[in-house]
Length: 557
View 1 (tube, rainbow, N blue to C red):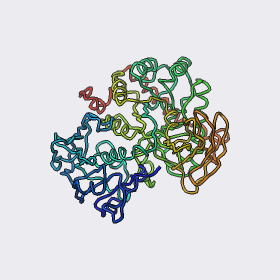
View 2: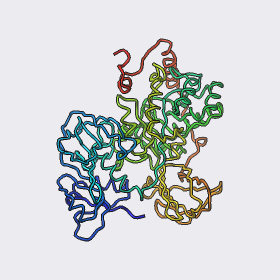
View 3: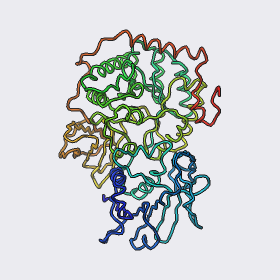
View 4: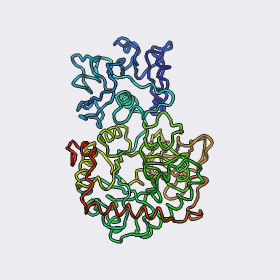
């Protein structure tokens, strides 16, 4: 399939916005060229960046059916938040329709003058900041914003996040539309609500009652994953384990550190220093699985959001499939890391030589923005809280689930399923192409597929990993390998399993692990006791920020 050719006007913008255009070329099947161009180049669309001028004749002469125009500084005022209101229109992405989002640098709207027939896609203070104008040869989108240049040290996440998105979002939306027929197929929109710390010691943990939560999750259609601490594996309550087995479609577990001490996975250093700790965590998790007969996803939610590259490498070598942490925490834990410009705009990030990082987000004062912005890019939606977020009951869960379910087509899943579904597919004749962002992926294939091409963009130059493909339970050998791409001859199969295996993979049972120290045990027992006694004391209530995000007066305010 051929990339779409996008003309950039004025031609100097190719240099000024070099970083941004490079980033977008990695995300979309596009090629950016100068416009007007001295040669006869057939354009699929055009983008007019600040400093350029636009008129119908320019687009008509080039035969450009779609045009996106950025209107200079558009009255941007620093230091004042405004609300962007998106139209409830089929011209707007389903995740954005009718939504209100706060923007730190929202344009005032004075520079966009709508004429009769224009469709207004977004407004600020009642004034259009994004509109669509149709003409005989196609459409023109006008945006009252300035796209980011993405200079040295800047990433997509800096300009596409809660509170700051208008410079990027219309551009991403435009390219989604232009490349739709040649784009890679994304996984369905997936979601999972997550709580840190709960264990299987009893039928409840603090304000979390597993029985009540299982019933509520079935009623309101959601899934909850609990990040459990391996150190807590000394006890499994039989009825609690049975409850998790019976309601595995609604309740599940993943791994939360090892001892849950301060920054235990966030320490800078060598991979060798982290291997014993990770191996001990896995041994303890295997013990919980044997006692409870419940599977625990090999996905690590690091305590306090701290996970260094050394820990990521150790997790990868010992068979973990992903890390789940916020992007902000990931950056803070790795201040010297060189993140790609696409950071924050893809399905996952990568750490430690190819371990996927699935982004989660806290229940802040504006978590609805996180939900909407992730849904727009088809990224997993994973809000994270703690047991005391349920101090006022399960209304918060109903609110969260309702907001997510209203997006439509949401697949609720445990973290193993989410980790294994982070891949893109594209069919080219009899060739099924897969772009892996998972360590393990179960890929549905069409009956006429005879070749499988696997790309693994996370692999670093010179890094060697084993690619294992199974068809109907049988391993298939690659027929061709080139760098980060492999070809496999396959026969008809409904689902193929593709697995990336570390060549230097280690088994936890073969590593020496640290002895259990008194302080982490005492600290954890004390913290659990405090958590469990809180419902008896009636404190603390739900954090005020969450109350504000639901549009209600915080308890105690």
